[in-house]
Amino acid sequence: MPTSRTGRPPAPRVPKRPAAARLPRQQGVFAFYHRARRGWDRPLTAYYLIFGGSLLITVLGLVMVYSASQITALQMSLPGSYFFRKQLLAAVIGSGLLFAASRMPVKLHRALAYPILAGAVFLMVLVQIPGIGVSVNGNQNWISLGGSFQIQPSEFGKLALVLWGADLLARKQDKRLLTQWKHMLVPLVPAAFMLLGLIMIGGDMGTAIILTAILFGLLWLAGAPTRLFAGVLSVAAVLGLILIKTSANRMARLQCLGATEPQSGPVDCWQAVHGIYALASGGIFGSGLGASVEKWGQLPEAHTDFIFAVTGEELGLAGTLSVLALFAALGYAGIRVAGRTEDPFVRYAAGGVTTWITAQAVINIGAVLGLLPIAGVPLPLFSYGGSALLPTMFAIGLLIAFARDEPAARAALAMRQPRFGRKRGAGGTGSKRSPRRWNTMRRRASAARSSGER
Image (cartoon, rainbow, N blue to C red; front, side, top):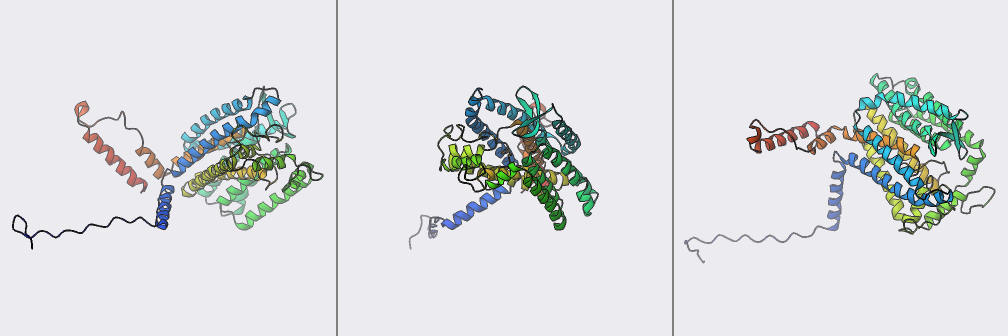
């Protein structure tokens, strides 16, 4: 047996480890699934989804409003960028509202509930006064602000119902009164019916449907019994059928479901059918931005209620699925915020806002796809309309504020704050940087432990 120079026997060689075999495809998929799941469970996931999703929807909406409204503006002898500039101005103002709402404490949001409700009711009453209210497309739900600017108070009624209803239910839950059906219904349901009545006087059933969805969302979050929930739903369904039966326009919209020809019978389904034409001609990747054919006078309301159809024609299936994915992410984040909080007001307000945006998106997209009757509601954050954009962006600011208010999210955001300008240790300006670094890491560790963050 050979020996080494020292006379000792050589140490046995350790056999080389075989090269790591490539993981099977199933393990790779499972590993990706677990990494994605850990990413979804991070404290700031909801915050980033709400902020990023709403920003992308708004920016893409501005692009599509500019593309879809050019022909309409030129037909009205206006500059091609007329509607885009108005929407951009509303987006800038709405961004200020979003930032303000995202920085407000929860107490201030609750304090604003009653003033916003009173202001919305006052403006909705003014709409019905001759000489003040303005009729648009047969619905008198507008107030002229001078020039080409108008405001639709019923859009602010959605925000008012969310804030006021959440504050009302939260106060009753603190007093343990929600176990009694009369406290759960009164005065929430009568106040909601008052708003619905003011809206229906002007003939805007689409906004009334969204308000009804918000009411049901609040009752569901409050834990309404099945019998009570079914009773309110039955009353709303009966009233809705009566309103549809007594209006020839609403009956015509109902009869256009599944229509494939613009004039297949006694009912004119021009708008519904041409919306399907626009989606069908887009293909996978669309005809190109600005290359829509249906917006050249064939598709009514191309930049408002049927902007999703123009998106499908110009950006194709990829564009429409991207919009759907953004709304799905926004809805998931809202549900997550409402489900992880211990504050009843935050839970009701976040659930109400999520119900509002999700229901309105489903009704608008369902009408464009021919699956639901045309209700005349815009696509949130996407369609043209400053009156709809401003309260919606304020509501998004509410969700951002609630997402930032979670204990783990607060700790994670505090760890990412800039450290510039902080005072040094006791050594003054001549002290070393190591004590400052040690204090920072110790503060980070204590913050993470106190929040329960992983």
